[in-house]
Image (tube, rainbow over all chains, first blue to last red; front, side, top):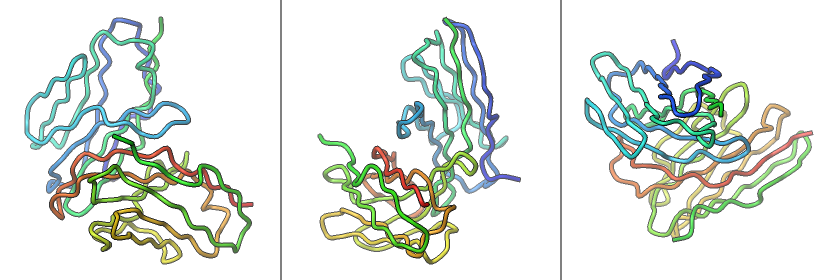
Length: 109
Length: 116
């Protein structure tokens, strides 16, 4: 089992829809959870972080964390073509930061 | 505030050579982490430096090494290059914080290394 798993996609949604990106992790000692966005040919850019169970909202983005289920997700409301990118989930077990393989999101006009 | 900078941006080397990459963190950030990104393996953690000390290390061979200077700038060295070392090498800086809990990391633009 991979330490951090994401569906590779591509996930295709129409413009204006909600995009739902999911991530599961194996280490129950993980303390911090991050979502990064990476455009093709660019470096990852932090868009959300969450430490506590529940939801955290920032503009069109909502991160959801369920430590009991070892699950973290990212919802993007009112998806725009400019949201088309690869989304990386990162999980922080003690002493390291582990990235998932990323989910490619495509938002169609 | 200036972002994370990495030099050089592109590098071509041949097998057996060695290479040194440089990273300057955001001003005030004391932690620098290095990552290797390839299409097949994704983003993999190499090591993290904090206050000139290697604090965490990933599962890479000893050919990969690094160091951090008193101004928090960091260098990464790869000796005896192999074809499989061709990748995008990213560094990320953060404030630092506790040993086990990462603050938010901010990535540099990366160095694209090609090994022929």
